[in-house]
Every structure is written in C-alpha cells, then in structure tokens.
Image (cartoon, rainbow, N blue to C red; front, side, top):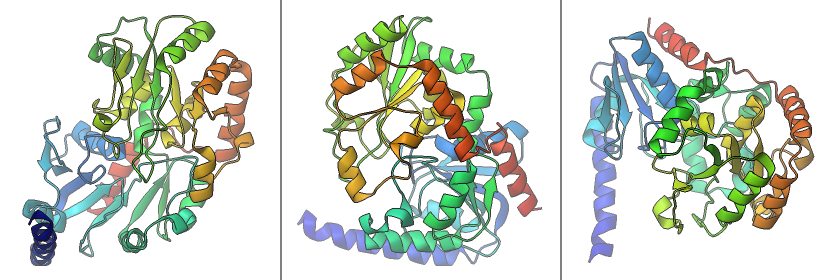
Length: 383
C-alpha cells in the first residue's frame, strides 16, 4: 500500500508546489530579502554562510532566510526555512536574492529582478564536474542543471584556472566573479581562535595536533573505500611530525556518517556533525582526502595534504580528472599502508615548492574579501 500511495503523494506535492510558486510570483518582490541554501537544506555552512555572516556583520535591515531541513543552530538575524514547503515557495518567489551552493533540482520560477548567485560547493577538485563529465550524469540532472545555469546571474571562482574551467563546465556564459570564494576568507584570518574552538569542542588538550580525514562522496553512496587504519595513521603522524595527534573524521554532506561503521575513541573523533567545515580546515594541521575540493585549500595556505583513494582508477574511467598527478603537490596513496609510508617520508621542502608551483599555475584570486565583494554586488544590484 505504501508503495502505491507514495508516488501519488509525491506527484500531488510537486503539483502543489508548482501552483503555489506560480501564485506567489504575482506578489510584490522584496529586494531586501535573501534566501540562502547549502545543499538544499544542509547545515549552516559553506560559501552561503560567509555571505550571510557579512550581512549580519554590517547590521543591514534585511530579511535573511536559511533553507533548513533540520533545526540548525542559526545565528540571530537568520530565520530557518523548511525546504519544499509552501513557506519555502513563498519566500523564494518573493526574495530579491538567492544564494546557493548546489543545483536547484526542483521546479522554480525566477523573476526578472531576482539576483541568483551560484557559489558552487566544490571549489577546486580533482575529479571532473558537470558538463566535463556529462556522460556519467543522469539525463534528468543534466536537464535541471542547464535550466539552473540559464537562470544564474553570477558564478564565483577562486582562481584563473577555475574561471576558465567553469565557463565551459557549467553551461554558463554569464558573469563570473574573479575575487575568490567566501569560504576561503577564513584562511586570511588568525587561525588561533578557530583552533581553540575546535579543540574545546572535542575536549582535546591545547597541544593536540589535528589531522582531518575528509573524503568526498561517491555517486553510489558506498563507504567501503573509507577504510583508513586510524591507529596506524596516528602512529605514522607521531613518528614523522612528533606530538600527540587526533583524527577528525568528516563525511561529505551527501553521506550519512551514521552509515559509516567506525568506533570512535578519545583521539578518533566524529567531526561530521560539526557545523562548520571551514573551521575544521582552519584548525587542522594536516588534511587527508581523495577527490574533494577541500584538500586543494591546503596548497593555497601551505599546510601538508595527502590524497588517499583506492578507487582512483575506477573514478578515472567514470568521471576522469582535471589534473595529472605530476602537477599536484600531493602524493597519492592507493592503499592505507602506502599512505602511512608517504606520511613517514614526507618531504616538507619539496611539498612547499610544489605548492608554490601549483599556486602559480592556478593563479588564485583569494585575498580574504570575497564575502564583502559579494554583499557589495547584491546591494548594488538592488540599489
């Protein structure tokens, strides 16, 4: 019975949302209202968070809404908005500005004076995205993505390489802001407060060194490749870098950490529920990832990073990569044991030289003021 009722319910819900949206677009547009979305209902984070924070910092009398699938701890001045509700359709239809970091994979109707900013969530990364791996995407997604791109008014890029890449990969020919991305602004601040906050949150001693393990998700949602030997990892880090270490394990928002079988301890910690990925990156000493864009933040700031991906060849066949390994400052491990060996033989001087060459090749725009620039553009648009 449930299998019969669910498709009917979903069809009626889609119809209701479409009718509501088409009704609400007839109402007056509020140019001083903005709706922010992180993964269409994800936590308070990523690029949209830092733009919203800039609105709060300036004390602007705007109505700010955050698309919230759960009861997130939003700061005063930002109101939660449940996705795919009548209230959601109302505020989206009447808001002067939309700020998203993922595609709109649902029906929407954009009005002429609405300003749609797509910040994207990945930034730099190893695996190809969007049009560059179109053969690996569903036709439904491609159709939604093309509609989404046609409605975008601004896309953000962190570097010259990304600017050129996005122009082709996003089915998009509109403006691209060459000022960096808001979530990278944090790297131009003093990291000490963020480090103290993270250590306190996890009840760790002040001299603890942090390694962040942050793999991205696979389209299959499988987690069997997230199979680090954490005890060996802690031993390898201590042997090469000294000190006492803790591992922060952070799953991608599209992967439920509850489905990842891991026994956490006092030094192997579940960082998936922590609300702000950027704070974890700012606080950590080392990152281990696979294809995720977060690993590519570390060459920009000179912190050590390692790539670990047992399914590297499989991903090459399905989506392929933007960079050849020789162009990266990272080493790549195809097994947990290989990763331990690369950590123990890590060459700091060679890595820093590789980071410099990588930065020179990509030509980063980031200067710590991307959030300010985006808010300036929003205010200018609605002036």
